[in-house]
Amino acid sequence: MREETKIEAGRIGQALSVALAAVLFGSTMILSAVGPARASEAAVMAASQPAPAPARYLA
Figure (spheres, rainbow, N blue to C red):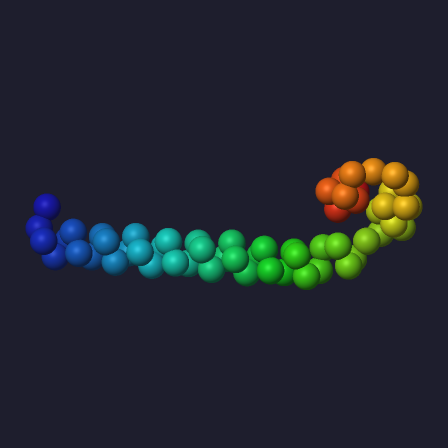
């Protein structure tokens, strides 16, 4: 492999890694901000029942 090709492949890999991290971080921020606040009636009723805390967010 030529040196220029190795450098180019490294740059592409780095760009893809940064893009993937940005997408994952952004989606995590959106879900953490919107997810628990947008509870349906069934989720609200399930949250009022005694259950472990994480189960309320899975409803």
